[in-house]
Amino acid sequence: MAGLPVQIGQQYEAEIIGISHDGEGVGRVNGFTLFVAGALPGERALVRVGHLKKQYGYAALVEVLEVSPDRVKPDCGIYEECGGCQLQHLSYEAQLRVKRQQVVDNLQRIGKLQVRSSSSDEEGIVVHPTLGMTDPWRYRNKAQVPFGEEQGGLIGGFYAQGSHRIINMDECLIQHESNDEVVARVKEIGARLGIRAYNEERNDGLLRHVVVKVGFRTGEIMVVLVTNGVEIPRVAEWVAGIRAALPGVKSICHNINVKQTNVIFGDETRVLWGSEVIYDYIGDVKFAISARSFYQVNPVQTEVLYGKALEYAALTGGETVVDAYCGIGTISLFLAQKAGQVYGVEIVEEAIADARKNAELNGMTNVHFEAGPAEVVLPEWTRQGVRPDVIVVDPPRKGCDPALLATILELQPRRVVYVSCSASTLARDLRVLVDGGYGVAEVTPVDMFPHTVHVECVALLVRNETDAEKPY
Ligand code: SAH
Image 1: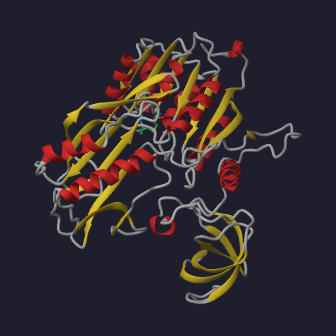
Image 2: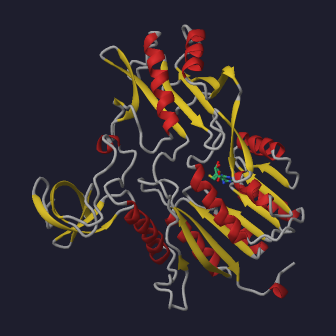
Image 3: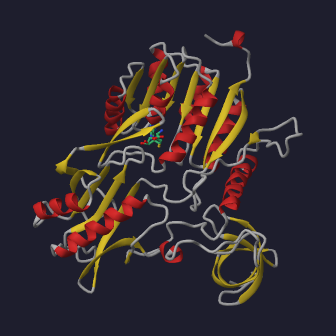
């Protein structure tokens, strides 16, 4: 492009000054910004420009000329092909620092909020160090493995970065070991029985995905075979093979997906053998997990995250709490242990059905769940006289609906606990709540997905007024 200080195909020396939310190094060449995958802050690197826009461009890393002290050799042999992790070349300590900094940057730039820079500062929000894992590997409880064929043989693994070409994989270092083991055995048995894999382009073949879930605390395992078609040939032999090879398996399910789609699951799930659900615990709360129900993928850090939310809610036993965007009721039930009454709302009806079952499973009667948009249901509850002392929100990446924030400001709960998976929408929403009379007391980032760029955090907001001014 004419007029730009760099040209496509040319090599330049770049100073890497930061890291983007996608994990790319943010490089500078003659004042121009280039995103360089694989480069780290503090490095100087030789890069080749691949793609240009008016304000910035993308460049490939040719050679690192000055190496960051935080650079480490990725433990995983397929790190670069896979793309499932983005930060394995950065030491874990540095990953935690980078994640905290991203939260700080968003609060400042998008929220225009003041962040306390050192412990001696009086003013501003305290952003704590990211709570990381002692052992940041093998943390995932769910594997969703696409299957294909290579030279007539059954393979299962991952899609090569940016494509739908399946690469065979024997282990994934962020998966629980037993998930790797299950996938390997299922692959062997499938190959032995002559099962054909689904072919996306031709829309033929049978086995699309194998989904494996494991309860970290209970050791219970569920295997789901997702197929393009209703019948599985030699299904009894397959079930017998899985049971013989994998004694931890408590449930073998079959999900039928005949659509030409990227969505993994189809609408119909059948139990081939065993139980319809497996169980797991977060803290003392027990959860039933079915083939399609949503469940947090890092159970160890989920406990840390919810523990922080519970601490911020500061419950003494009698409070009324609302959990908006409650999913299958995980946070609601966690809070119900310490609250008077909890109201959970979630837009997906099946999730609410699961939430009710989970409440029953734990014998909890002080929770009420309702399906619907939080921004509609919360005002309804208000009309019915519900007056929450604490509101917890855990919205999807797009953040809270403005109408929900408006209702929170009308209701004026003493505390708002905001659990967020997107620091930018968190910052936007905190600004609205701060303008409406809340102070952001503190924010704690929690590392739910080590080695990936995802950042999760919990923020505590406290109403500025004293109790005497409470409007009801
Ligand atoms: N708190 C849960 C799930 C959080 S994920 C947990 O920790 O497991 C966010 C949830 O918000 C999803 O379950 C999604 O279905 C739900 N959701 C999205 N938009 C919504 C809306 N407008 N009202 C209520 N729930 C919504």
